[in-house]
Image 1 (cartoon, rainbow, N blue to C red):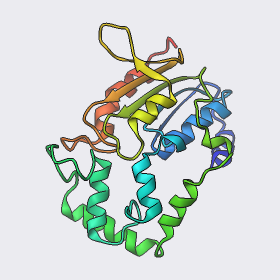
Image 2 (image 1 turned 30 degrees about the vertical axis):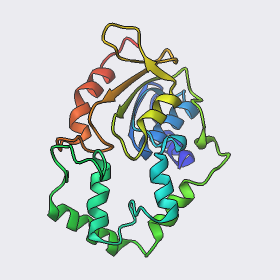
Image 3 (image 1 turned 135 degrees about the vertical axis):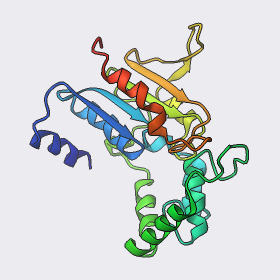
Amino acid sequence: MLESTSEFLDVVKCSSNTNAFGISLGGAVCYYMQHHRPDIIQRAILVSPAILCCVDKDLVNGIRDGTSNFCCLKSRQDAKLLMRDLSTGRDDDTRKKKDPVPKFFLETVYREARKKSPEGHFREVLLHLLEPTDESYAAGKDVDTESHRLVIWPEKDRIINYEEGKQFFEVSSSDDKDGGLASKSANTEFECVADCGHVFHSDGRGIFDIIRPRVKEYLLNFKG
């Protein structure tokens, strides 16, 4: 995937002043591409990047022992639980909108999953992706501390763990009056989206709607 993406940047002749954006698995690809191609990618925005060591351990264990059918939908209930997990979690009874999407959407997701994928296909793919490896894309610590980037992480992400993300980017509470977060990497800005899951806020809003103003602000700041 990384090699193909790198080749694509060359084929389309990206300039040496390119910005990159990625969320979830795309965020992980974006992270490693910025490290691999500093000649092209100058600044990046990473939203819950699915860096292997940051994937939620409960999710990983559930996929491995078969108690979680994440993306491996065997029933309509699996589709419902998936969407709840993409919000602030299937067990969170405090959020305003328990099911972030309407029933007809769940039905569409379930039918498409059953129609397009052979039995057990996605589970095998996930297990393969989660296998320990020595490949460069499986870094256990930040390998790109000098790059300019904005990292945005939902506080209640049940897919890519917020606390693991803070540890990976060496983030702690800042000494500023606003009590924000600061990374040891001088060019890294790390921000949290409160009461939000991987895709949906507890009130039902999508994460793209929430982060759009901040993303625009970062990309249009040409001082960095």
